[in-house]
Image (tube, rainbow, N blue to C red):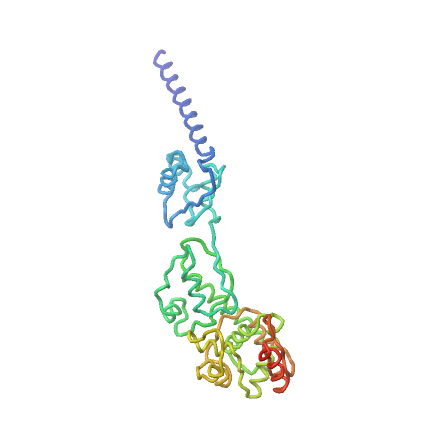
Length: 333
């Protein structure tokens, strides 16, 4: 009988100790963490919960790592879905909320904005300078990069869609290039499928080239269709397009901020004062509005335009009218 009482007492003590231990374990997971101000914490790709909580413990964010390791043994499905990336830890967060956060899609994100009208060289410069990206393409030539994107043999200019792209730390720059390339390919395909029937161009790539000229010519959205109409009518009559942005693009690093008569006569593959028709490649990355304008040019009877300031143009029907506009807006200025 005495032995039974002793065993019963030991069982009671063990149960009580277990309950106390369980409550203490739960308290560890539910107590606010030692986070006095917002901070970033990164979960490396492929990191285990054990490694992550050990790092959290060494940084003083959690008091001890053992409650989380116990939790992993008791409920492995609840804690084994950690997401790689940076997370924003805020005051008041408890242990359970911490694990839920590190297992969520709420990673800290960054943005890369590629404006309409940028060249591919400008895009590469911005991409290379973007923080937090995994830079895998810096040492690639343009040709190697296009092959890595899956477009071997294609010229890169104009092939990437200008937009704002979101990413989180550790994302490869190549993945953003692939995303931008796919966006432009799909947009161009959709726009070309809905084109007008009487265009002087015959391929989607020519529409891309034409759209890049339109994009670089005007900063006024309402002018895109009219500029496209001027280009259409000039091409139909066999007139040269004579658009300054093609001269600037052809000059490359030799462009010093102003165009001379000698520049306009300088033969480059892109100089539409010298060549007839479209240049061999786009000269920039056009947005969807410029692409739409290229395949839906505005009807009219104008053949000339000249910049009149603030990104807008004066349109003329005849060369005489155009020369008068040049004197008014350019020479007198």
